[in-house]
Image (cartoon, rainbow, N blue to C red):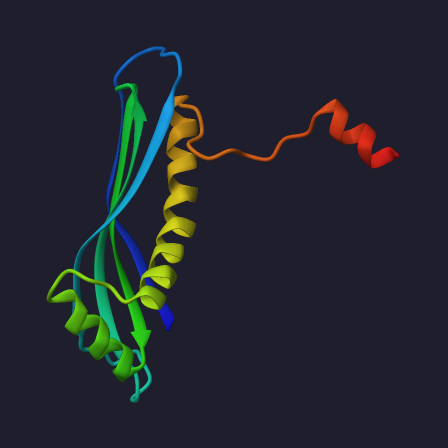
Length: 141
């Protein structure tokens, strides 16, 4: 499998309250469609799949909402493409394909989400690395 294109089609973030205690983050990925795509940009033996998705983060209790929608185009082997399209008829995604797909979405969407959170002054939905005095002392020893 190879990523050919990744495009956001919707970027939406909204702050609902000024402050909140005990903030919790709920992240969700929804795949809205998977379809075959005819393309001259891929190798002759591979097939292209077009996937539409929605990535959302809810900041509970009703503090903020973030929603990113987009389209991914992947180059896949014909056998895998047939399996994926067959499974999608029942809204099922084969595990190896799902893992690859979700990792692509998480890699791209998390970066965009962090950028948007920074713009709105929201806390990060994922922990970022940070230094502490204790960590620095452990490294010296």
